[in-house]
Length: 143
Image (cartoon, rainbow, N blue to C red; front, side, top):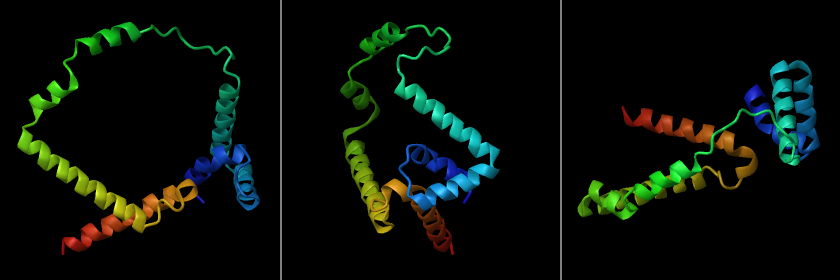
């Protein structure tokens, strides 16, 4: 396995959520890979920060920009006026149909390749398979 996959699994590994054989494989890899060891240390540090929210961190003073941002938002015209100025009614219907069609095609492809069945563990592999299939389809269509 590549370091990327190991690093992807380190969160689940540190939480003890992986099967024993996967944990053993990751431990074996960690013994020989300083980059993944450093990554695991970052995972442990982030877990410690999340578990101890009252922990004082050495962060630079960050100015509070909430009031400025809220004032900018209040000065903006309502959303429906901003959208209406950019789109003609005829174009918005075509765009809506195109977006729904594209969404349906993507959903079909995701179901076809079983992405939703293995969402927790196989999203990286499914994305790679989907990407390779799309590349293959595009190359075949150019002939």
